[in-house]
Length: 129
Figure 1 (tube, rainbow, N blue to C red):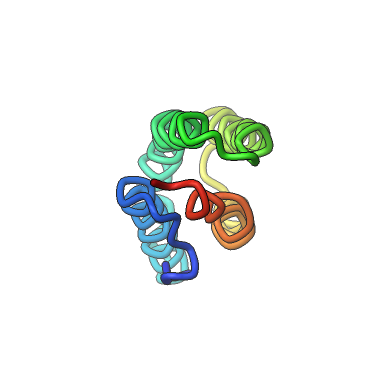
Figure 2: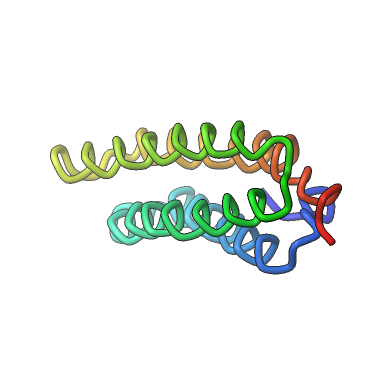
């Protein structure tokens, strides 16, 4: 999945952080498809966990500071996504690498990128000074 201007929020920092997630997902999917997903899965899920904490906090602050009308919905969706990541981190630590589950996770991330950013995050454009 590739980042395009359709996902732009009007906030350069938010957009750069989003681009990082797009790239991480794309590169990890490529590694999985090439049969190299197992070795980096621990780093990938730890990245996702850290990303969720740092990025979501920053983005939520931006929306609140700009009185974005969708700020509460954004926070709720972030909580749901963070729980998804936390659940997968726990599953991975308990059961180890599972190729099928790795593909499921990347599919969910790509769906999130397309649906959440294009529907919710882009609303920052209308309130960005």
